Image (spheres, rainbow over the protein chains, first blue to last red):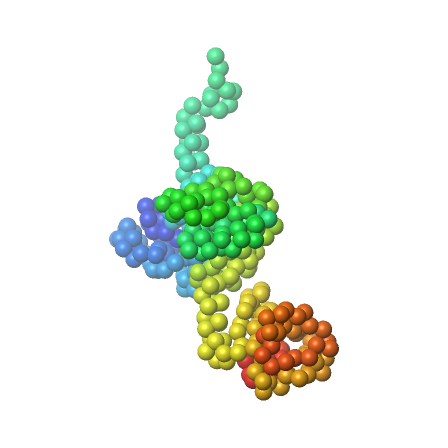
Length: 144
Length: 220
């Protein structure tokens, strides 16, 4: 296995908990942050990381999560603006080298990039996957 | 001047009235459909219903023509993104965001967004009010690097009967305006202070106490 990473994950919903479980299972250190403690139930019994209840757009919460030590910061909440704010704080205040955030609205992807945050847009990903299924449509236009 | 207010509620309502009274063009963007209808009926503002951090909605609100954007929703992340979009996508020259968590003020500043915290402004106002009633902290500029303070000079204040030149206020302080018996005065060095003058004072934290002592004879 490659070097063990320290990963901070914001939002412990379906996406966040899944990523946290996977990373933890492959031996990485994970801190999962969510506003509601109840969401931590989605973490697998084998999850070996930390759970932190709090608002990840607050400096004090990210400090508590030891974000300054993080190699990767992943924002997965269902609110695009919360993700973008938390990601910018991670990058600007805590110098996290790799910062990625989910964004639902494809129109906002470019703003994320401009602000130094790598966007993961479910819609864009789904579109790419669907179009890859019919590659001739993308490459040469429809051949009649 | 065109002003775009993102966020609804009483704050949007009162602000739009203030701007409309000064003949500014106002557009309010709110997510709440019911509130939008109410605002459309009760203000002169154009109302756009939708997510104010959605670039397309902001386009509809005429953001390109806006001189000022005020992000006043109850959610700090929304206000941050609205201000950042206003700057980067629409080139709006002046942007101000409301922060609900006073701690966010530092965050916004570092991310290049000018912000004001109601909680902090209010708590400081209340603090000042309860300490000395003749002294009111008006505004703090740049996270309190510059203070505007209002003073009501009591008859026994050491500044009464002296000209500003005689008082010799320290560097980086200024008596910016005086209201005397309802009449405004923009003072000069020879202006003599009188009992009952209402003074608008500009100071920095370093000399604030010294200036108050010189004019009022009290500590801040």
